Length: 300
Image (cartoon, one colour):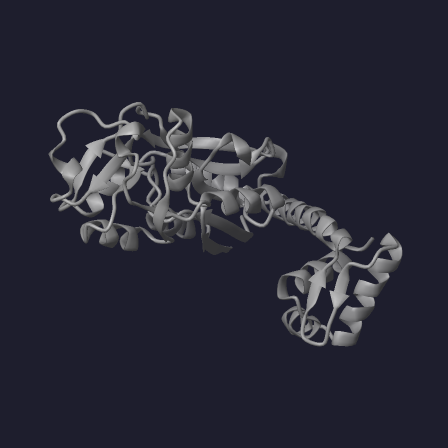
């Protein structure tokens, strides 16, 4: 099995189109088709279902994609490791982050990294924590700043950034705003909730807290960015349960501590593959993160 066959296979799987993949790889379409057929012959299984408009992965193709991405990531890491030994860090840093993550100033960190390692190409992807964990495990990302749960499996290791309790945000005229007692999940039963998609870290943490308390809740207003969530709460359309640092993004809202979540209810981490699979670029970024002057900020 040749590496170029795997590279060609992954490109077609990503683009779901032979012509677009061939253009991106700068190879002829006939050559790309021949490469895929050779791989299918070797594996004795069809990898794609071909139609006139697109191609989709077969079950065998989906199984191969996971391993192919991991193999290509390890090959890339090997090349970069040799370059690092020679004193030059090259290659690509593929980084993922959830929006408004606590514990690290992503833009400032990447600016420092670019200044220290100008020959490394930086690629940034913003998504929910669940998807980011899957991409690190598959080798598509070198590391990600995210919220981790036990469901993310044992293919990942983590470097803790910060931890904080969850907070209830509501409009100052909401009935909860005048509450002096600590609120628990049971006190919020029946409320209209604004929350993120289930893939997001704050949603995962809130769902876990309510499940542990045995309280059922329904998310009526589901969004995929922080500012829309705050706008909806600011219009008194619902309440939100979020990490504590979110309260500083909209000081006009009332912030109430959520009983029972504790100081470590929401922990953000840098997710990485196991040590032997971690790229030199990822190691360099973590070293910068932990170095004096670039240590993660702690949420107030």
